[in-house]
Image (cartoon, rainbow, N blue to C red; front, side):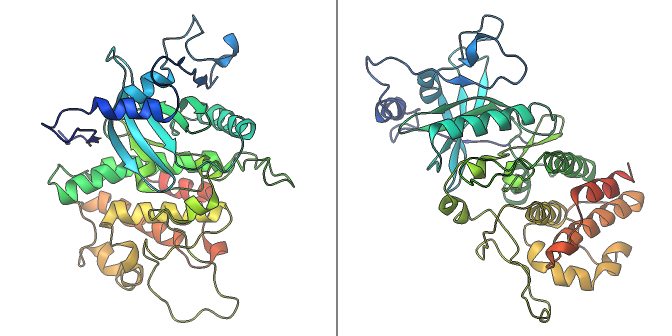
Length: 363
């Protein structure tokens, strides 16, 4: 069985025991420790509209966590970036597990934050390939969202576990399913109404994800995939987004005729541009090449293009998994789709509808 992804446990300096002091510091830092009243979370009304949207007040719904429970029940950090920190939260009953993303710096006010998160929650709840949101909090010193927890972790976790820790590697069928599910999620997002406005502080662009990367592709126990962090880049300051070392965007082409081909940008060579669907497509191409040939595959784009025939015929090794016959042809076709997503000419990149149609032709 594939080794499960793991989170970094929150431990005290002594004896490796869990740090209760950390939880107390978290409560005190945000003004809800000691004898002060616990703060309610807001419930994302994905499927119903009763009881005013406050978590814990609806008798028709299962119990939901409060702020005190969230901060006091964190058992590990699942991931960190300049934008946010994601934690695993296990409630005291042990029956409910959540993922909590704490934003480092939110760039909008409370009313707009609430409006955007509620819209994202409604849209996410209508797509089985997006991670649904359960609740959120906007307080003076703390802003976070609560979502479903996926015990297998992210695609990045599984790929790194196999490459660096000797865990069982994903086979082609599992990788293919993850790529297809991710494509379906992005295509669904791109089908949404953009909801543009002249006031850039009072709208959320619903037809763009903006932060597509392997660590945001969450894997369920059956190896189906759900895309997380939809809309989150439009909650934080742009400065926080621009410094995210996992977020790769291709610079726009120069106005003059393009020079000779150059290597694809590395994660350290970032370019932050206005949110657009073509950037989502590019980052999906990064996921494809990483999933097929390893994290260095994106930087070897030109080499791959020069040796496509040899890769297709099995004379040159590229895939980091065993694949033969019909499955090899299928994997090679997905590779070609990934390369088309990485085209340096923005307009030459295919739409997600076309990408999804091409991928599904072989199912």
